[in-house]
Image (cartoon, rainbow, N blue to C red; front, top):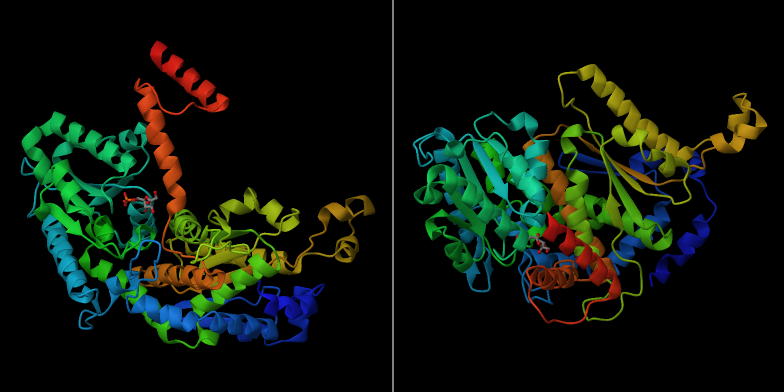
Length: 532
Ligand code: F6P
């Protein structure tokens, strides 16, 4: 697969980033692209201009431009679920109707956004109170996966946009410790719950929502539920069954994938925390990058180039992971968010027509904020046997009032990309007076690829641009690998097996015989539970 890239791989075999930079003083400028307030410098990758051109041609040959248009116009590109993929419609201009499957999706989106805004304003102003007449001071979002990671990450990232009107907390794990921690110190009378689940059938979310409901009822009585619980879902029937009326439900549609849903009603807890105006700024940021992705020529298209560099590292250089390293404490949750976005989308081994993918697909995405990671796992990044491509994300404007420390943060970010790319040769180590026995230990191989994404400031708009850039990157890679980036059948088996094991734990007899390992471990747990 991708044999078109072979001659380029051959030509570049053995070359070094030192040589590539020495050969072309304009390399950084040539291998940088701007979109909105984002600047991507991909020059510290083991690529040259002809290789980039070959990758661009590959994208054209794979029909990227047609596939992109098919997504934006609502074709059912999620073929295994027969659905359109229209998260871009969630941030489309209000005056740009889009008819898909007989529905004007822009009008539908605006209607929900209007209801979200009215609700948010009434809660934030104190007009809508809890059952006892107290103002809400905390919103607790109960959801998991795409119904948690996006809102959680955005609220954490936009610390500076929070005005303290409403604090947001998040509960995801079915481990009761998560809910207990989230409820710790809260007063039921001033707590609003958003139960967020696209399907409203997710076991973890329903268990946590039921427990939260009991907590509220214990404090305020059954009648309080209607004032303190709202739902975000596509499943009105299950929401009703849970006991939340349709008036208190904010809907979205099956054409919004969970991991692409933070700009839908799933973002309600974000809107409650940062207010409607800032939420609209966030949407505007997404829209900026949607427009860029849809209209910029592929050779100047930031998400396209980010994706193609990733394909080069994955498929030509055989690198199986991607480290996301935000040099921003406020973006500490971005790696976890991108993990779902990327790995649930492109962690596939068959193509759209069900044939084996025939090539490596989505990488393992992981990461931590810099500089923390430098003192933990960067040792392996610099001298380990597994090269790891890195996405460094940095901000020009300081994110804290300790502006001097921002200089140190930025210097560290750039220094890491230097060390990864150019390393330190044995000769340089020896020339620095290091004894021969230590030279191998203190040599850095270099030639380790990294992207640097520079953002002006961590505003709602810039954050929207950044996240949309990654959404579209994932899309482009899915097109190149020929997979469906919008289903997630791979999570189903585990759910089914867990349900069966819960039944056994609750004493249900029968069912298929268990393997000896699972059987033994289950017995161990049951015995311990029985004796506690
Ligand atoms: O199990 C995976 C998944 O379906 C994700 O794709 C999704 O984001 C998450 O579960 C939560 O689903 P829901 O929003 O329906 O509760």
